[in-house]
Image (tube, rainbow, N blue to C red):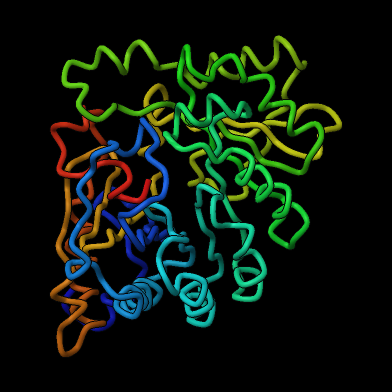
Length: 335
C-alpha cells in the first residue's frame, strides 16, 4: 500500500471484492420524514461539520484514481443541497463512467433539465405507495401528486427508464405489490421492492418482524396476479437487485434482499457521509474518518491511505442490528 504503484492499483478489500462504486451523501437533511428512515424529531448535523461540495469532489477524484467508476449522489435528500446539480456536472467532468442520483422526487421536476444538462446518467426515485393518503402516512408529508408528476416528467427525458424504489412493509403497502408491478407493464420503469431493514428505536426487533416481508414472497405475490416473471441477467454482477420481466413489459420488476438473502459477497460499495466519514458497510456501525485527509495539504495521497485502510477493515458481511444501537440513521448514511 505504501508504494505509488500499489496506491494506484484497483481498490480491493481483504475478501478480494473490487470496490468500484461510491455513494456520496451530500447532506443529512431531507424534506420528508419517512418512518423507516428518519425520525420526525431528528437532530441534523451543524452545517459547519458538513463537507463542502468541493471537498466531496476531491474525495471522489481520489476514488476515481483507485478504480472507482460509478458514483451515486444521495442524501438525506440530495436536491435540498444547494449546488448539487452543478456537483453532478463536476463528477461527470472528472471522468466517472456512471453518475446517478437517488431522490424522493419532491424537487426533481424543476431540476430535471439541469440534471440532464449536467450529464446525470440515471435517477432512482423513492416511492413506497401509489395512494396519496398512504404516502402522507409513510413520509409524514402530503406530497404524492408532486412526486408522481416528477416521475412522469422524468420518463420524458433521457433519464428514462426511471428506477422506482419501494420499501416493502407488511400491513402498510404490501397490498400494492401487484399495483406497483403493474406499472412495468405500462411504463419503461424499473420497479424494485427493497426489504425493510431494522427500524429506529426497535430495540427488541418486534416492530421490524411484524412489518418485514421477504423478497421471495413479494415475487410470488406479483406472479399470482400478473403472471410469470422471467429473470434478467445482470449487467453488473455486483448489483443488489434481482430483476425480472413480465412478458411484453417495457419495464422490469425486482427485489433487493439485504435481510433474507444478503448480497454481501458481491458488495462493491463505499459510502461517504456528509460529515466526512467513510461508511464501508450499510449494516454495521463502522465509520472511518476521512475529513482530515480531505483537508490536508496534499489530500489525494492522504485519502488514498484512508481508502486502503478502509478496504482492509470492510467486513465480510453486515450485521442486522436495531438502529438504536447505531450512531446513524439510514438518512445520515445515504442508503
